[in-house]
Amino acid sequence: MKFLIAGLGNIGPEYVLTRHNAGFMVLDRMAAQYDFSFTMNRLAYTAEHRHKGKIIHLIKPTTYMNLSGKAINYYLKQHSIPVENLLVVTDDKDLPLGKIRVKPKGSPGGHNGLKNIDEVLGTQEYVRLRFGIGNNFSKGRQVDFVLGQFPEDELVQLPEFLDKAGDAALSFCTSGIQATMNFFNQ
Image (cartoon, rainbow, N blue to C red; front, side, top):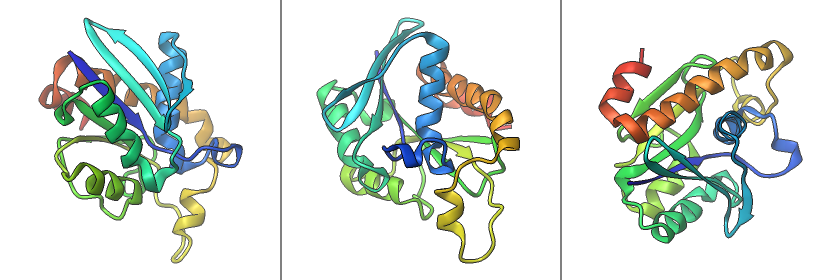
């Protein structure tokens, strides 16, 4: 059985440790933990990981956040993966830092990356893993906050949060959506 995990973010050194790149960060942490690496391919950095009998394709789209659907659609077709085996990992300003929420479907909630995926795939029926980045910004400063880097005190906490998100992503692939939500959405 094959799965696609897509971590959302923006390419380029100016975005490396920004909150909006939480999806990339989760996948990078998984790569370090499970000793696989990403290579540059069409529309995305890609990797393959075998875990508990499952073949898991991982992508970090190079299309920038707002065009993530193009890369996801390409790799779903490339590997003949049904949309129900897709997991999208994204940042969420409505969750406290490090809190994760796994959902079987949903609206984009103002997230332009999810909005584009919905448009390209023609559905909102795909699994999302939302990674909390907090919302400690004043009115009108959302873009600066989301595209800003994690401060030092939050960076120290990140590895533990990223590990938990990676565990949830793998749980979806091996145990299914319901068991994953029951365990990780607490």
